[in-house]
Amino acid sequence: MMPITLAGLGLLLILIIAVVFLVLRKSDEPDVSKRLSDLSKRPDQVEENTGPVARQVVEQIDKVVSKSKQGGDITRDLARADLKLTVAEFMGVKLIAAVVGLLVGMYVGRANQAAMFGAGLVGAVIFSFAPNIYLNMRAKKRIKSFNDQLGDTITMMANALRGGFSFLQTLDMVARDAPAPMSGEFRRVVQEVGLGRTTEEALQSLLRRMPSEDLDLLITAVNIQMEVGGNLAQILDTIGHTIRERVRIKGEIQTLTAQGRISGWVITGLPIGLAIFITMINPEYMMPIFSFGMPPKHWCCLPVTSLAMIAIGYFAIMKIMDIEV
Image (cartoon, rainbow, N blue to C red; front, top):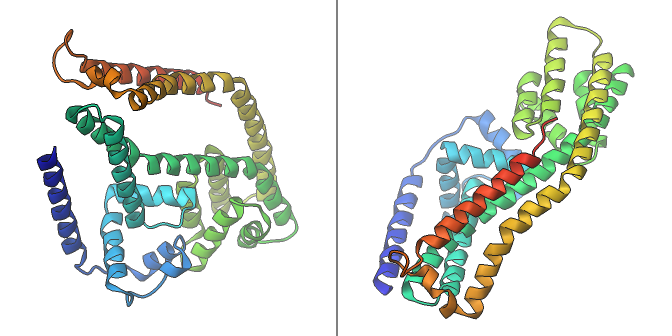
């Protein structure tokens, strides 16, 4: 077990040195892109590269990682969840979670060395996805709140347009008077327009951060009105009524399918939690499951088969409960 651990630590050290060597190479960003990216950062992050060496290394890592496809997806998800973290900081959180999962897994599978190694590896993989799960849950909750507020916000915009406001003044009023997260997202739209983006580009950026069919309908109506003209206030009234009805129907469906979703969570979590509980209080009892070999003497295939069947059952239940509106 010790040689395997030392080899793993050695590979991790070599990887860290290689990453630091690569990210120390300078790379310039366009001024407009840098200003737009500063909108999603904390105030202490919007500084010149004159800080300590460690901060410069972290900034260079963030630049390199953000240019990849996975880094771009993480940046988008962080913006959706309104987490003021850089990509490098989020990857650091994932690394820390993986180390914690490794230690927890080694403790759970302490029956023998093979079980300790396998459980530690599984724990590291599972815990490394914990930050992503939290990020997705927070983003979904924020998007849901945004969609729930969108109908009333559109009505507010229609009334402002009838009162003589321009469209940009209407967006600024929503940024000042609407509740969060609506106010924060529209404030960013106004700031992007102020930094040189067109209104269409800023609204498309809003749609990427807040993926919503209702918002897409609003943006499409605004773009068409800007090209061909028309009574935008009346159009917004119709769209607002449609969105409010859709939100009401979605709420009723969520209530009717709540029991099925909870059943899926309980059925999925109960066998896994029971297996972990028994392993912690009596490792010797569960030791044959983590042994390697062929049935019937050893049961190495049982955990993999069980987890696969549990996962299939969970996704099947969730698919049945997912009703499109």
